[in-house]
Length: 443
Image 1 (cartoon, helix red, strand yellow):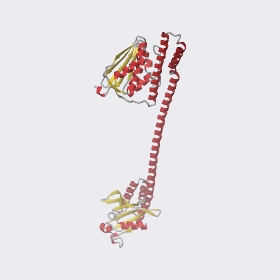
Image 2 (tube, one colour):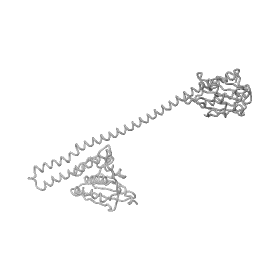
Image 3 (cartoon, helix red, strand yellow):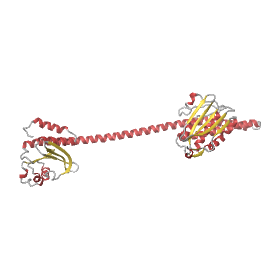
Image 4 (cartoon, helix red, strand yellow):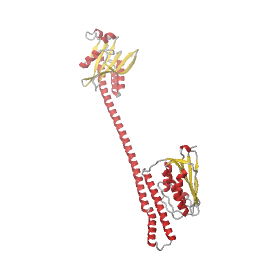
């Protein structure tokens, strides 16, 4: 490569070097272009590390049988790779060193590397940036003397200047790219945090809506449904106090019966209300354990026998005595109490209610069936709905608030079971549900 060489080739080489912004590719392309045109057998590119100030060999190039091989590296300066004395002189003086007959040179000819490799021609050119050396291009040839003429060195200097500019551009690009990546990661992280906050806000908003709905429902029940049984109690109590002396035993007993039934209704309403509000706010305790199904249900039946006797309803029980389940006993009582109360409420005088349980592989199938009023098809779909409430009066005008079945479904689900309903309007209803068997009871 000389000044008399094709000027277009020199321009193309400079363009190729200036167009590359990836540092590794820039070093490879620069070394390849130089070794293609400079006549050197070996080339080394040394760069100064900005942060530490140390000099490192970053690229090595060899010409072997007309093939150019480039290897990127990160080595310390070593006499095994190049004459370090010459490189240090260039670093200290910022000047080109050209040796046209290196072994005969009075100063550098005794250099161990020059002697061992029998170097004939070499050149070390500073890569300058604003008069400061940021790198060094070292080229050698051990076959020919006077290889690196002044014209050739001038062209190489031009390419080294372009290399210095391209290295700075590549560093700026990489710095910018790193900042973009960093900023992108920050934006992604911020977006994730915003999404998390949005999800949290959405969750909190849903919880607030649920709490507001619970509060409104609670106030509605307290303000209306709970007032009715107490009005009966207060009214009948006033009637007894004012007319006790004139009332015969039959009328007195009738008033007391009103008071008793109203008290029971109020108690069950309060119990359901308490359980429902705790379930809605996640404060209901859940302690499942092994319990005997018949003993648990018998206790609940005893609380309802008075109502059955009042309406002359026959309670038919078909529950094996040795059947053990794994469930929360309080929840099982609430389930039984509500389903049995509903069955009695919607069964006419002289009817019957059947309670039965059968063991399957892992569950107990429990059913409470009546021959009462039944439920219309359009109402069955909303019996367990969270958004809609279905209530109707019993055969003796008994009133409900629509919480009992929702509680039953929630408690059955929490204990690992399922509930279903079959009903024919005017002929009766059957509620079936499952609860898990205790481990030793499973087949």
